Length: 267
Ligand SMILES: C[S@@+](CC[C@H](N)C(=O)[O-])C[C@H]1O[C@@H](n2cnc3c(N)ncnc32)[C@H](O)[C@@H]1O
Image (cartoon, rainbow, N blue to C red; front, side, top):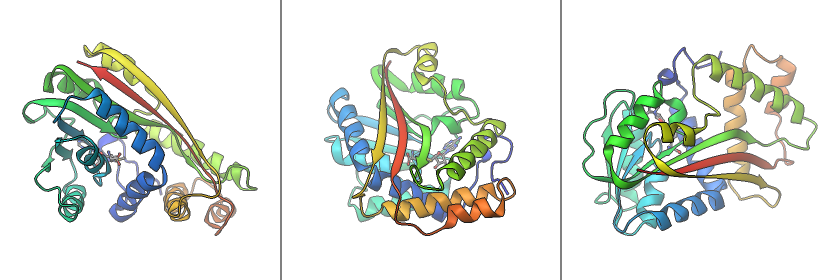
């Protein structure tokens, strides 16, 4: 049955799949992630102090620490299990002196993160039960000229476009969109508008339309398998058994299509 339970903050899923999916997303959409971090690097000051909101498995924290010279990163998440995984990756990468973790519920008044130049929120704002409160906290946490980066998904990845099973994937996404809406998740928001309301100015918006066709990056089939598996779990009881079986069929005809929107806002 669906695993969204009423409010945005109690969105739950098995950790191993979520962690693997977040890591694979960065590997498969490598060009998008690299371009995004490079863009932030051009806008951020030298040696930036970065706070990564809803840091998850740590892909953003690691990329920012690697690409932004001298960056110090505080990775924040409500979920200690996520942060334990993140810390292990940070240690393995030899970045323990540059990335620190902090457990916090960002729907509550924020702890003091110290002087902050960049706040990075990738696929995190839609989880906030109170996005207005979170943006007000971000405004308070940043110094004048500080940078807020919000990256969100407009459309979740599609793998079956142009295949005989494209229709069932689309119906599955439509059903999941309805569940997210009912659970109060903040998808498809104009985060630029919301940031301006919170006091930010100079908001820049970029949309990234990602359309990967064969030859695909090597981890793409596993990424498709993990995402479609999670979809099937949540769609149990919402799609027919025959439709669910079509999502499960092993296949060699996938592509990867998704849309991401990023807002850069200045304090
Ligand atoms: C979809 S994941 C995104 C992870 C990461 N930013 C990325 O782009 O791969 C969302 C993360 O936000 C965290 N999260 C959700 N609600 C939160 C809250 N109220 N306070 C702090 N973290 C939260 C979740 O635990 C999860 O790790």
